[in-house]
Amino acid sequence: MSAEAEAPTKFDPNNDPAKLAKIGAFVTKRLDSNPLVQKIDVPELQAYVYQGFLGKRDCDILIKKIDAEAVPSTLYKGTEQAGFRTSYSCHLNRWDADVARIEARMSDTLGIDNNFAETMQGQRYQVGQEFKSHHDFFHPSQSYWEQEGPRGGQRSWTAMIFLNEPEEGGATEFPHIGIGIRPQAGTMLIWNNMKPDGTLNYKSLHTGTPVKQGVKHIITKWYRQNNWLELNTAS
Ligand SMILES: O=C(O)CCC(=O)C(=O)O
Ligand SMILES: [Fe+2]
Image 1 (cartoon, rainbow, N blue to C red):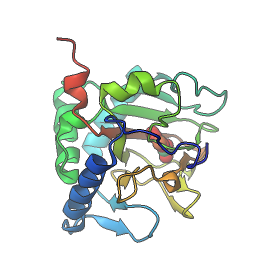
Image 2 (cartoon, rainbow, N blue to C red):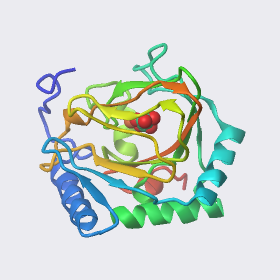
Image 3 (cartoon, rainbow, N blue to C red):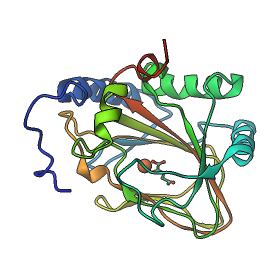
Image 4 (cartoon, protein in one colour):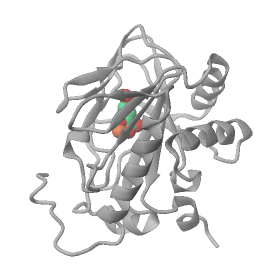
């Protein structure tokens, strides 16, 4: 879908550029001031790499949980396409002590309240498995938006951690930007799915390229515009 075709015709409080721009500015300022975080210096995307964010022990704890619980990955209703996301994945319980501790550190690094994040996902890619090019932001023109919009609003930032290193393949690539990040155990990759003005950044398109040898485990955390937990907890 082209950006023009998706240009909003009326204000949608669940996809609020002013709010998304404020989140973007705050997070970039926080990451820019952290000497442990490396900015990927490209004009089209706000993206950062934090090498060695997780130690081996924590990577192994998460890999174990993913292997115990992963089932074939899914896509949003109406966007399913065979062969598009062939990994296995699972939700990671935010009340588990290890998960909670790791999530708290991730959210503190970005400076976003952890309750704005969806349930974190763990993913495993075996040889030949991949996640084809996609945007993490929600396309408000898609039918799933009617349901997802009120449940936390637009996705702002993504934080992803590589838990191990496949011998070959499995890089995360941003084809519009011409960059690829090779899996390195413990490295956190962070990017803004919005442009600095808070509108959808189509150049954030990215790909989990096929693993050619070995196995790739990652965790992915998607932050929303609003307090996700509050809006998704039955009262
Ligand atoms: O596996 C990757 O490198 C990308 C994963 C991804 O794009 C996602 O989980 O949204
Ligand atoms: Fe993604």
